[in-house]
Length: 405
Image (cartoon, rainbow, N blue to C red; front, side):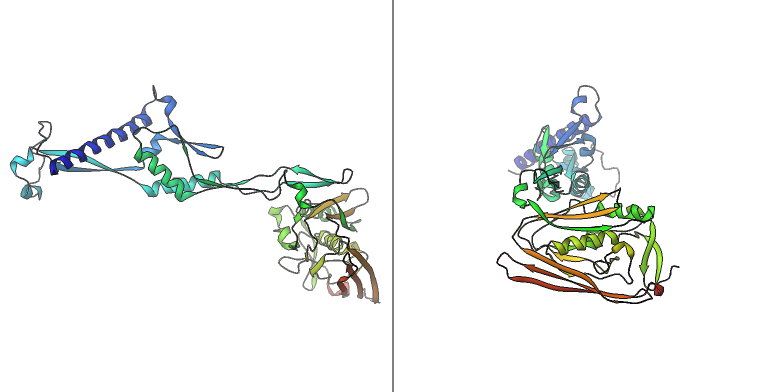
């Protein structure tokens, strides 16, 4: 019984060695196997060629000896034990030496395969990207500006096991191996635009930046790109700072005047408050709930009428508001080059709300340029019930307190 087990063991090992030999042969032969130089790994519609030479490197070989009384070959060297102190001399008789067979044990290096799959995931994984849409005022419909991209993530543990099972359970490798992955569908797609509920203009904000320097205009246009086409979900709180992202030279901004602490200095992104101010006005006239807003330290003529501006600086102050409409809001931006007018338009669903904005009113204006203002925002729902009643007060110091450095 023991001999029978030993024979079966040798037979399996022999087949395994033949299989490994085949792998090495395919990896190094460039004639008849030239069209089989790699194993195709499939991840959705992506194909990755895995060279057999790489595959062969995943195997580890360990030589070992077995004694089989049914095995007798003159090819084996009975004087294999050259070292007289070898422990085998004590455990094997002279007769056993004629039945000693050299063999090779192989194993799969699973960590190497896992590392390969992890590296592969960095190559094939892709983030989900919603379709960019725009509102066509002529047709009063939403259109696709740029199509969506579904995300893909490779399942590293499962894909690793698939490769291990494939190369150890088959005497002949298949042409293709399907790995494990997950598809993440984009939320905004060409086939679900109607579900967004965007069918009309719900509010508009406007400001004018006439007289701005070239660098200030450059910064305004750079920042605007972060907001044009932005979608806000129902009940989502918008953060201007979070949406804007980094403000530095690498992000495309130039140095221009900003108000910082107790002075007016040049920093990357000067002029971005033109964008935040216009966004604030669009939110006000759309009847949205403002959750964070601060006026500038002193009156800036670009933000006339004074009292309806919104100062931002990373990380704060920030401009925040909540989309309190029943459906998505699409932000669309327009710059009129001939008049230097900036428009922010919010498109969404009419819930028959009524928005009343009064002001801004100047309550105090001093010779040094300091002033106080306020304006009110009242929002009534379709039943005429008052749901928002806000007073936005602004306190501006004298520009003299913030000299240019």
